[in-house]
Length: 259
Image (cartoon, rainbow, N blue to C red; front, side, top):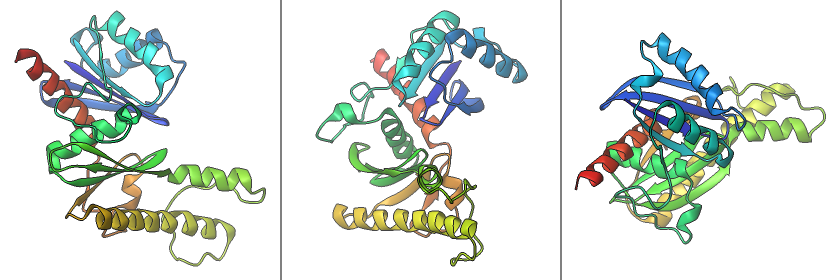
């Protein structure tokens, strides 16, 4: 069985696959200090609940934007799965051309999303990934990664308002009932929520104008569901995109190894 690990700045998603079938999936907060043994204890309990055990895993693929976590995850794979994990990099994904000035700067998450989006939806595409940052990634007609836009995520904006302004409280992110806030919380929720909708719509519009070709827009990420039904600029909400990308990369590696 394959264990696919996607480590983001805030949350990590771990999925278990049996061939092409996703058996189960878990989400946890990202930690840079959790050791391989601690991962194993946590994971073995979850797998037991799903009717599996650690010894069922014989493949591991890792995508991380948090370099400090990689040492422990490598050790987890080597020690408990008896296999060397495949770690996503800018130069080791079969079939993906990285068309930016410095390919080494392409984040693993953006490349995995490129593969996941192209596999399911073709190209060209704009992938809007809403998490700690909001990424707008361009996927070419051949599945290549062609750059994009990086903006602060909606949670970072909320946090900045609270930390930088003494009288502004920490609040939950949700769609407000009205545009004009009649109290502080309402005004903050309107500014952040509709401000991000406007950011998304504005950036998508400018990308399409500059790109000069028809493009589908696919949204993913931990915050993406907040915007469903709120803007016509996004064509598809695909919450499985990143994990699908890891599975597809694993399949391409095996095919390449047999050729």
